[in-house]
Image (cartoon, rainbow, N blue to C red; front, side):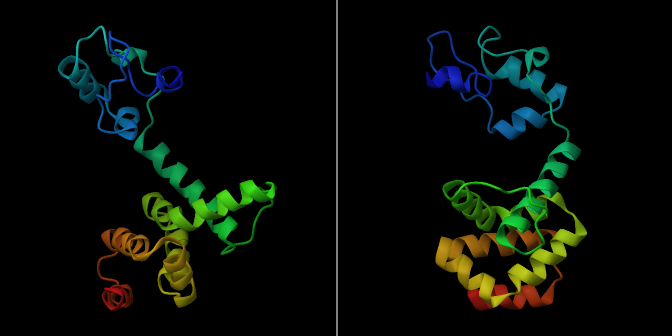
Amino acid sequence: RVKGKLSLLFPSGSDGSINTTHKSVVDYLVGDDETMRKKVVEGCAESDEPSVDERVCLLSPEMIQAAHVQLCQYCLEVVGLVESEGVFSANTEDRKRLNTYAWKHLVIHACKGGDANQMEIVRTRCLLNFKWQFEKLQRFGFMAIDNDFEEYKKLRPSDRALTLIMHAFR
């Protein structure tokens, strides 16, 4: 049953086992044809691995970036940092899961999306906001905040205010 659900993501071997021949699903989806051809030939027997032409889809880096921008926008709305466009009319249980996801992944989506407006909102209303920091710390612990700071610093290493707060946390 599991193999049937995952068969599009992970190929199965001749013995019925699930093979994880790709280091990640994202690499599999965004890999260029030459990279995928090497993985198919070198990774396992050709009969066990779908060929490049058999892949379900290939996502460009631009498509992945656009998805992060949209996910960040949803997260900003769910957390209440921007006005909601009324997209979320989920029941209480789904709303709780959306809220947890949004709090956990907001900064990473902003950073991976690279939208300047979203990055500024995340900087001022999250990373430099003590109330947000405290809430995130209570929900997910120190490493979650530290990971957010690190991800943001990769894109804006000269942000002095962020560096000072990051060092204060440590």
